[in-house]
Image (cartoon, rainbow, N blue to C red; front, top):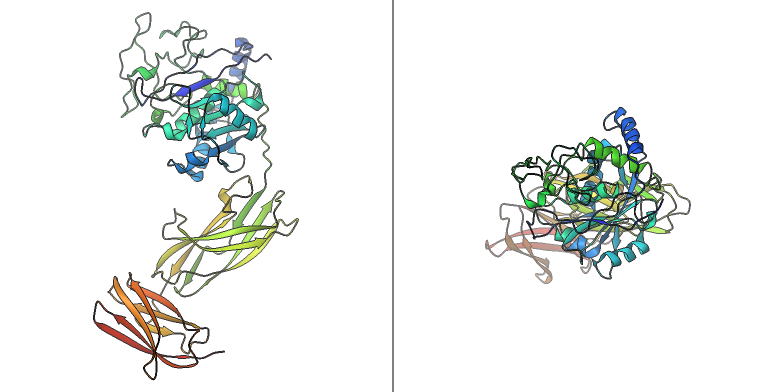
Length: 497
C-alpha cells in the first residue's frame, strides 16, 4: 500500500478561545480506502455485541520528559490511570489498551520539540509494535499545538507516534480528552468538522464524501468558533450550513473541537472505522509486551506496635522475566494518609540470586519513635529509582496499616531500667503539646554528664538518648520544662552487658 505523508494535529490556543482547538494542517484521505469494503466490515462489526472486545489488547508505551513530569500536575500514577481509563471510551470499537511497561523518563536534552526533532526522538526511543506516546514540555512551530498524531495510512509503523504536551493545556482542558482525540486520529478518524473535501451538509446528503465521511456524526461547523455551553456541554449556537439549515453538532464527540472536558463519546461508525484500521493497517500492534516485572506482597495486612518498637514483617517478592541485576533496592515509606507515600524511613538492598523467581524477605523496620497513638501506612517499594524497565510499576508497591498504641505506658516513664543497650528511652504524655524541653543527666555526686535540648510538639512524646559514654552506675535524668518552670526527675541505672 502506498503511503502519502500527512500528520493530523490538534491545537489548543487563544486565536478563538483558550478553550478550543484549531486545526494546523489539512487532512488527506486514505488513497486505498474502499468504501464498499468498509461497509461490509461495518455490517459485520455492528452484528457483534456492543462493547465486545473483538481485537487483541493493544500496548501503549509512554515516554515522558523530566521537565513535563516535574513542571505539571502529572505523576506516573495519574498517567497510568488516564491511559487505562481510555478503555471505557474505546470499548465500543472493541479496542482495549494496556501499558507496555511503566512510563519511561526522557532524561536531559531539549524538552521542547518541533515535528522534525520529535521524529528524531521517536527514532531513538521507539518501542516497536506498540503505540508510542510522548509527553513533552512543549511543541513549537505548529501554532500552539498541544498534541499531534499520525493517521494509519501514512508513514511506516516505525515512524508513527503520538505527542502531547501537558504544560500548554489550560485548566479547562482534559489531558485524557486530548489523548483520546489523538488516538482517534491514530486509528484513522478525522475531525468531525473536516472541510478538505468540502463542508458536510446538515441534511446528510454528502455525509460519505465530505466532513469526516461518516454519516452518524452530525455535521459540524468547527466548534472552536463557539456555540457550546461549558457548564452543560450542550450546543447553544445558531450557525447554519450553506443551505441555511441550522447545525446541531455533538460537543461530546472526541473528534470535535469542543471543550475537551466535554469529550465522552465516539459514534458507532467512528468505532467501526477504528476497529477496521486496527485489523488492517495497525495489525503490527502486537498483544505481546515482554518486559520483566517485580511483584511485592505480604500476608500481613496490618501491624500494631508501641511507638518505640520496631516492625518485623515478612514479604514475598516475585520476579518475572529476565532481570539483569545482582541486587535491588527496597524503600520503606511512612504516611498518615493512605493515598500518599509520605517520607522514606528506611532503605534496604536485597540480593537477586540468578534464576530466582520468588524470594521470601524478612525486614526489621526501624519505626520513627516520635509517632503518637494513631494509624499510619507503611509502604514497601521495590526498585524505587526505576532501574529496571518493567511491565508494570504499580505492583512494586505494597502498603500495610500500622497502628501505634501507647496506651499501656504511664504518663511519665523511663526505660529500659537498667539500661543495657546504651539507649535510654523517655516517654511523656501531657497537654503541653508545644514547649521547649531540656534533658539533663546527673550522677549521684551532682555532676552533669549530658544535656539534650528538644522541642515537644505533641501530647505524646518519645525520646531516645545515647548513654554509651556513661560508665556503669546510678544516674538521675531530669526533664526540665523551662516554659512551665517545672522539672521531673527519674533514677536509672547504666549496666554494660
